Length: 285
Ligand code: PDD
Image (tube, protein in one colour):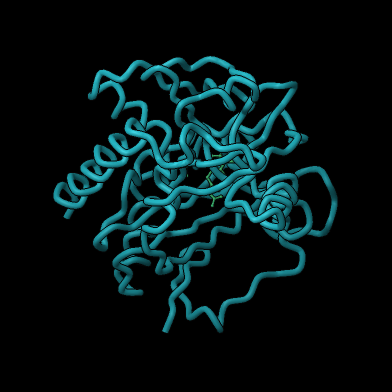
C-alpha cells in the first residue's frame, strides 16, 4: 500500500484524486521540491523546505506549514512507505478554482501533495559520467523559483535524451547557466567554476553542499558567469542535483571533456559529498 499526502491527510495512492480545476493542472501555478532519502533519513531537508517556502513566497502563495511541519510530513511518508533509498516529492499549487488567470480569493487554499518513492543512487552514472547536449536557455527570468512550469526544461531534456545524452546544458547569450534539472560546474587548473546564484539559475541544494565541500577542502571557487567556449576548454565538468548527486560530464555535444573520464577534482568532491551523506545519516534520528 502506497500512502500519499494531500492537504493534511495520508491516503492510498489509488484513492487520491485531484480536481481538474487545480491551478497546477491549468497553469503550472505552483512550486515543488525533491528531497533525497538515505538510509531512511531525509538529507538536507531544512535547506529544501527553506527554499520551498521561499519559492512559494516569491509567487505570493502563503503556505499553511512551517519548515519543521513540512519535514514532519516528509518523515511520515518515508516511515509509512518504508523508504530506505529514495526521495520525497512535494508540491503546492495555488489551489482549486475556476480557470481565471489572476489569483483566486483568499478562501481558496493551496493544494499540497507529496509522496515518497524508492530511488537508489545512480552508481553507474556516478562512476562513468554522462554525455550532455547544449540547448538555448529560452526559459523565463525567474529560474531561481522552483516552479512547476518546466516546459522549456522538458523540451531540452527530451532533445538531449533523443541525442543519446543524459542531460541538457542551458546556454543564455553564450553564458552557461545550468542543466535542465541540475547545476553545472567546470574545473580548470584546480579552480571550480559555476554560474552565480542569480535569477538565471536555481540555487541547487546540492550546489550549496558542493561549495561548502570546496571550502572545507580548500578548493578555489569562482562563482562567475562563464561561456560555453570556456566550458568546452575545462579540464573537468560535472553536474549536481538531489537525485544525480555529483555526476561527471564526459562529453559536450559529442566533444570529449578532458580525457573523457571523470577527473580527480570531481572524484574527490564525490568522496567528500558521500561523507556528508554518512554524517547526516548519523546525526538525525
Ligand atoms: N531538479 N536546476 C534545476 C533547473 C533543477 O530542476 C534542479 C533540481 C537543480 C538542482 O537542485 P538541487 O540540487 O536542489 O536538486 C538545478 C530536481 C531534482 C527535479 O526537478 O527533479
